[in-house]
Length: 323
Image 1 (cartoon, helix red, strand yellow):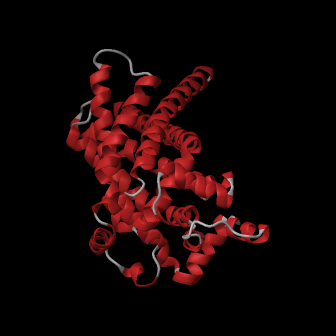
Image 2 (image 1 turned 120 degrees about the vertical axis):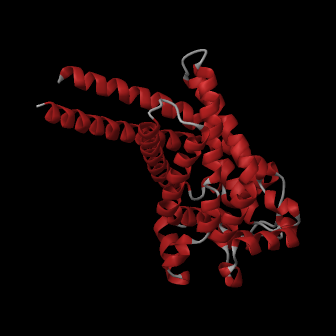
Image 3 (image 1 turned 180 degrees about the horizontal axis):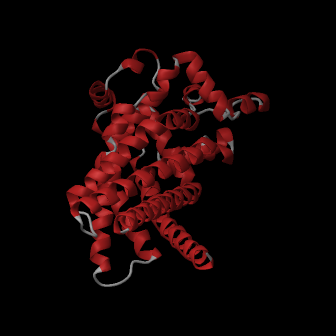
């Protein structure tokens, strides 16, 4: 009888853990959608700066004005549809696997808090799974956001002379259309371009969450962590992580839009070529808007995630009470 009771208890624990994992996953995905929607123009500016040659780069405000003049306000939101879908899937997968790995390490060590090494390992497992599952989405998004063909046509900074020409250049490619064009022109494996630097960039969320978890533990010693605390800690964690890993973000973006012989170029060779052609500063093109966007997005994400997670916990408690 006791064995049966023990088995039921374990089964109940598994069900509760899975429910909690999904709650974190949906909260993270929802928080990601809201935060990205608020900061997307900064993503557009950063991505275009990453894929442009140094000679074509301009200041943030000048770049924004150029996009608006050429494509209208909607140009700042190029690829947003695929980005929101990608953010939802990415955050859902990441948070699910992070909480799954976190629970595993907690059961193994029988401690309520993870050590720094365990936290980094959980982040590495979650990040690797996320990269492999979502890379095709971000290849499509980068192509749509960069609009490289349009940029190359407008390198002389002149506006089209006719309204018809202007509308043609500013026409917005669809997500499905961009996906099919990539597969038709370059083959399905092209959807996994930049996977290696993306896997290296797993360091980004590892660093971000390590900083966040350490700060959270310090705050929890004094008080209950609130949405404002999560906002500040999320921003600080992302600021540190993005500043350290930014050169690889540039390499990944370049790999997504590479053409000709550059498509088969390795990560190390790509780094060397960027430095050779554009100097060290070429690795940090668009870092201003990117760091700003990353920090703000992460701040809102953590704040929204905590709010959504608390709402889901309260909702589950009400359901249990009714049952």
